Image 1 (cartoon, one colour):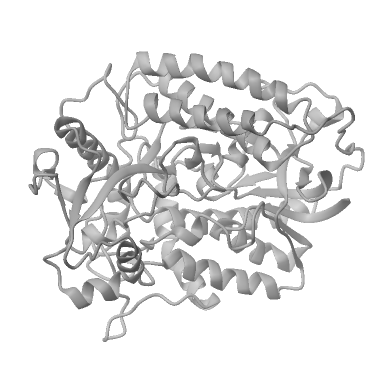
Image 2: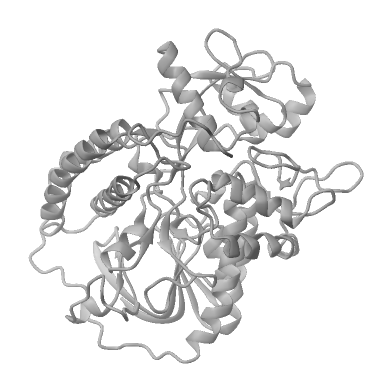
Length: 524
């Protein structure tokens, strides 16, 4: 199959869907997703969206909280843009039909999360992401100018490289002409030419053994741009959420939202003692990097596998009403959070780095935009402030849509793009090679490139990864493609980018903590 569209969107979370709805008034839109349309990381977002709505909160307070959490590496201009546009983006979501919880007085029932100085997180119970995703999917399904292609895998973005033109990281003008898509049912690769392309492919948590991310979070967009010689930034800053439900029988770690700590939940060790007072005056509501390191240290001191989140002292009815999803999930494995402490452990959660974009979501590759977790806007710096991620997606998908609408008016399709060449490829009859390589990769990253790092660990990880890379590239270059080998290849690319960035950062900052560059005093 070969087709032309005005706006190609790869990914169907909040970033991709809001962008698609905006540009659809100005041309033909195609949304491509490698799973079902509503199978996204957005759907798993529990906490909510941080935005300024009422006094005594203010834009300046939210800005300062974001800058403090980012540990000196945020782009202050981007932070100010994002926060000041937050109110209008929330109004837009409401106009689309998203329902945020309200108090009996009719005001938003705002939550407070780690790093926030005020109650400012809008939510829908503890399933905010699902409410947003379902509402946006309904809007997209009804739109006559939006085509949806589900269960198709984007292999690569198309650039001059596919025309036989040499492209490297010093090439000044690289252009995106569309993307190659793998149809897993037919094993055929289709060509979609587009005037503009938005990558909204999400994060890369599956590079680690333990993650709150869904199985689809394999860093596809980041890897595609890296291979296309685009700019990737800040990949060393992988955020570990401090409180994932400890359940060894479950591969995908269930998130225990930070809002539960904001509601009054207390962190305790296996001896039943609170410990955060040893690490930060803000206790369990310190920025995530500090809390995750504190838990990691407590586990090492006591030799435990998990700590506890204690909610037993909180009002039972309010606790269940505010966090019904968490209550039901814990109850399903025999934990009643009104009577039992919740076993929790840090898990890979959010990719703060990614495809470098400017204030309009433009990447270093012409006609290619990125929004959401796959992008690096400069908002998060060295550590993301809780519930700023959905807001970032809203703001930069809106800004990207404004620029893309104007840009697309002056672009012609490049009809010289060749179709994908699969000549000589054979079926891989040993899937164990892919399965085992993925396990090795996740083990390497979890053991050596986790919450606490060192030069020795990073060097070992780099050397081990180089072998995996060579083996996987050799297999990829001779195999009929499947999503599994493409995802493995992408995750290895992402692992390399994380390790390389970590080696190059000669300091401990935010989410990157190195034993070789210790920080004895937290100044945040």
